[in-house]
Image (tube, rainbow, N blue to C red):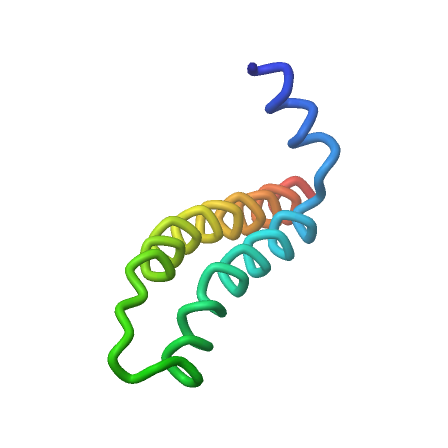
Length: 77
């Protein structure tokens, strides 16, 4: 498993991690936001809320890795 992680870190740039993190957060939040705007008023979107709860930390982790890679790249210059 560490081999996979090191290959991923070498292959993806900081911008790729930042884009992936933002995309995961948007894709995780969009269904619940659309449901609250366009869905029925008496609905109970438990599954969409769980999707949001899982997607936001994963996206934040990807954003954190991207920011950390940017910081390390700036400090190495």
